[in-house]
Amino acid sequence: MAGRTEEKGASIHFLRPRARRPDVQSIHFVFRIDNYPHILRAYGPEVARSAVGQLNGILADFFRDDGLVTPEPDGRLEVLLWNRALLGGLPLEKACERWIHSFCAAIAMVPIECAGEQLHLAVSGAWAGVEAGVNDGPDALASCALHALERVRFPGDAPDYGEVWSARYRSDMAAAAELFGAIDAEQMATLFAAIDGQEGSALPRREGRQVALAWQPVRGAGDANGVLYHECLIRLIDDEGNSHPPGGLIEGLERLGLVRALDHYILSSVIAELENNPGVTLGANISAQSAQLDGWWQDIELRLAADCSVAQRLVIEITETTAFPNISAAATFTSRMRTLGCMIAVDDFGTGFASVRQLLALKPDIAKIDRFFLARAGQCPRDRAAFMHLVGLADALASIVVVEGVENDEQCKLALEAGAMWQQGCHHGRPGLTRTWRWESESVASASSRGFRELPVNSSISGRPS
Image (tube, rainbow, N blue to C red; front, side):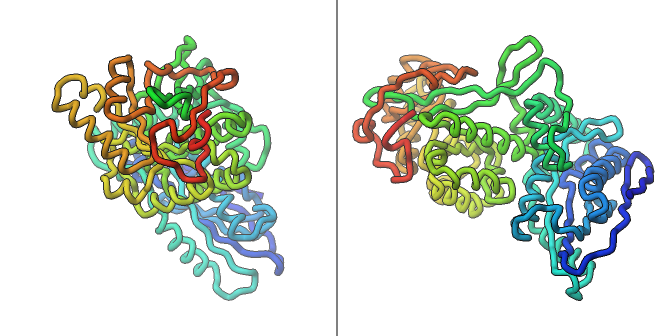
């Protein structure tokens, strides 16, 4: 039975270990609150200690008498687990990696009450395990797990000093809490079940607020007919039922290191739409921070590998509002997604962080020209020439070029003049919460009539738009 002591807002659980059985495996987990130093500087030591205590309590409630949880003063928590069966029947490595991913992904979206502050924790984890009876000892296990955790990089901004930075961090965290608090309570309960092992956990949600997914078509113009795909766009529904974009929330989540949680939620929702609607092709945005094969992608990979028809109708758009943490890792990620059958798009081409050299490494199937350049192209001959050259450069890097921000017929014709027959903007359809593809009958043109090079054989878009 667990005992509890309380000190300065931190709740610390001590577990009484049961006698080990010789046929079980000892596993040492180590977790790190990546934004612990940020919380310490932005909110103070009491809130930071409370964050460690809250995470400690969640871990202790999960492992109960099957493990020992030990919090450290630097935002780390170590767990010694001696009941291997608690993680399920998968092989040890897969079971540990999957549980760590589920835990870290769920924790990022679950609000944590810390000394009166509503926080979201960015948590990373690693593990090490040996068969019972091996004489490595707990210290060696802990050292191995810690070395593994050191290789896991935090994608968010490093902590800074001063009240200006602290105020922005608190503002970003408040916006994140509002966003995650607005996500469907049922889906949040499913995530939370990964933490406490209990189905049907009830989580609070702000009354009258919710997150919704809007859909905007990427349409053909000129000789290109039909809809290439529908892009998923996140929208916030306010208390009056009005829909509006999240503004700078995405950039804030990137600074906090929490954007992967939102990307995972949205991509999972888009895959569910594809599974339920076999005749549609959909696009989902992810941050450059998410473009790396780690534990966050385990369940996504499994779902895509299980049904190639879903993967072949998924366009993963990488938005470069922040730099790629590792361009080599990003190239490995895009290669893997393409192998599964997905299309890769680079969003906001021309204004993002990636250089042409980096884009060559990513080998995107689709390059989307940022709306800024089309808006400027109509102002003077020099900006018009720059737009024309940018479309030509994008065409050299990708099989398909999409011009964003097409608001009227004049801009549509200007994009066509530059050679961009695939366009997106209010001229071709505003983002809407209604899934119009359920009854729309789009004309389908062959690849040869669309004016772009032949696409890879794994692309569903090459032969059939949605």
